[in-house]
Length: 75
Image (cartoon, rainbow, N blue to C red):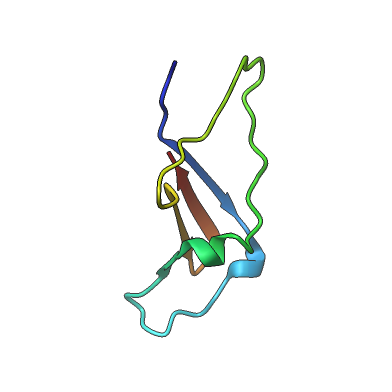
């Protein structure tokens, strides 16, 4: 069995925004906002079995930068 910290990064030009403050170029999205976002359907070729670790809160983090770059982490 292997536990991984899986990070993905992509750019979605639809998410570009003008920051209200030059120092605030990134926003962190809560889990409710993440549910409405497109996330790549990533898979591991030749996997035998895979599961997600289930706990009381989601082990996910999503951050969007003003240029549309998305950073997504799941454990």
